[in-house]
Image (tube, rainbow, N blue to C red; front, side, top):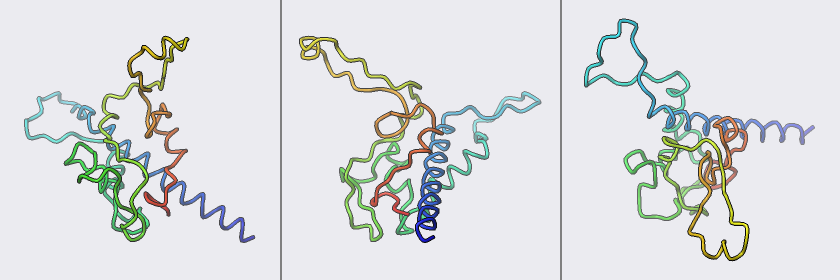
Length: 170
């Protein structure tokens, strides 16, 4: 019985992290979206703010909510700072996190700006022969969501949450 409770708790935690990833992506994906068109088709003023979907608004709240972290002090924006092109806000290659905010992560924080002009399909063409591989320039994988671009849709990424005690161990 205890094992079933632990699995339920783990699944609930994974769902919270997945929802945060999905909503954070909706926030960033909606950042470049056009504002809703009014039915009277009057020109928008220069001071008008874009209207986002409810999902994007929820994503924005979650992106800045530190309650989703283990420490309760760290939001997604703590590492993916909007003021720093959605990248790290300081000179650290890997940010500090964990329950006490003193554990350094294991990887550099990527900017999230790539989601604005993302190629929908992840591909990596590789040369056929060894001589072609030695002579080709860097052909990194492109497109997709996630740190390595493996997910073509936010829904796919949300089903594979980040599992790191430094990010969100809850």
